[in-house]
Image (cartoon, rainbow, N blue to C red):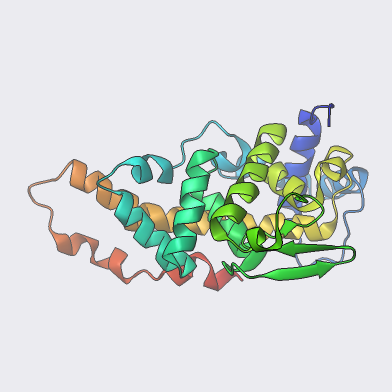
Length: 255
């Protein structure tokens, strides 16, 4: 695509996602950008892009995982956290390494993989004349150069999937529109023709990402901060509540 993604379309799309969150039980269908605008107008000032976490609408915020995963003293803790989340050390490492490689926030990468395949490397979905396979459900038509075995290799699938997500982030400028492009394609989003199923898809991933990010900050990042700046009165018991937090909170309660 030689044309650039329009910023105004991006803002309208973000607002549309917020609208879908507020009206998730509604039968209203977003068939076009015009329909989305009418829906947004109908609920007045309740819709504002600043209601989203800043990291979802801007690529300028810092990913809390990347600097800790780069740190040799914290890398194992990061890997342990995401291994418990995904149920596999090899899958966690494949996603973490490629998220770092392509500058994709790790919480977003894991949220996307969960939505696409529930971290199942052998996931497969037939849709018409093509097939989606693997962790990030790479499409057979979109990636014709890959052999069938490649789709089911966690490292290769994560590499191609996160490279494509990086492209979507660079093209759109924010996570919300990037996820829509990943799901529905750039042409649909550029034209403002975003299916309701895509809005729901983006909404779910946003929830997963926010929960993963929050839990990571509690269980890993906060402990790294204390380790770097210990207080004489601090005791290990101060972190007992964090130890009781279940990783299932990141995904299980919002499936």
